[in-house]
Length: 40
Image (cartoon, rainbow, N blue to C red; front, side, top):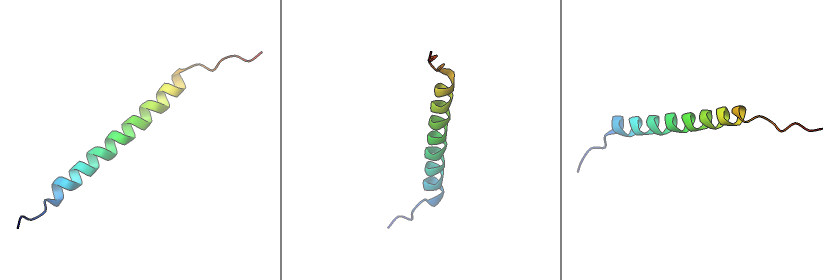
């Protein structure tokens, strides 16, 4: 039986976490870049 490659699994989790953080940061930046409509 093959041994599990824990370092590979950890690296994959780190990559997924980084991707998720980047998406969240890009979403926040996009929300800041859109100007709010002026209410009169």
